Length: 306
Image (cartoon, one colour):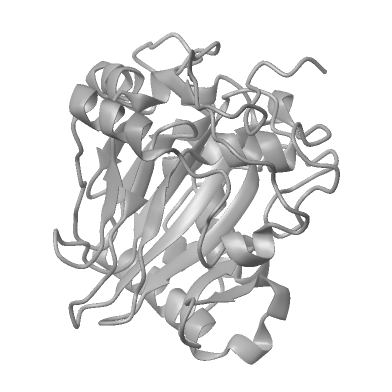
């Protein structure tokens, strides 16, 4: 397959134009988001959905996340990533396969229907994870485009995927919330440096390859600005796969926890990686011929066993 988005192949970074649409469907009155929201996603590369879950549903999700964090021995050890300089949990991957509550969340129509509309296709879960920033010790996630890694290391052909971050604790301006560069999703910033074998073993703690150069980041930030969407538990932040984003460390006593769900169009299934010989493992990138997600409707607390 032709590589439309080459990266990590040249000595200098390049800013290339995006070759794919951002919103893949025509908006109609039946769309699961408003015309204004669809236009904002197209323009900025992200939108925020508020008050789509009830208080009981949010508490239900928080309990499920707490159960995952409280009993790591019950999880697949490969899916657990700790902080670079401590044993504090940084991320738990494949949460939709390790928690029935998270599986039901991923399939919920309030999320999945939005993904299907924006991507213009049936969808499946490419990756899921619980990102946790403990108080005082939570380290930063450096600036990056998810698509650059998913393309080079996983073999995702086109920009037809998106992430949803479901806030499970209050995200404030102070406890390391997600930061985005709105509008950066329309520029594909290539990265410098060949990718080492089994790069994921270190990159999940601290990424050193597939990292944008500072000069290009500064240009994007000066051109578009930086926004840090915050919100109460239950808020959902959607962002395009190529949106430049990151987050600061958390030196407050208030932990931050978010469930991340990555939806990919079924027509955009993974191919052979475009920049490495050995693809990343199963819990980071769903390979093969995954079936379209079966969308579920109704309150979370009534459709999932406790």
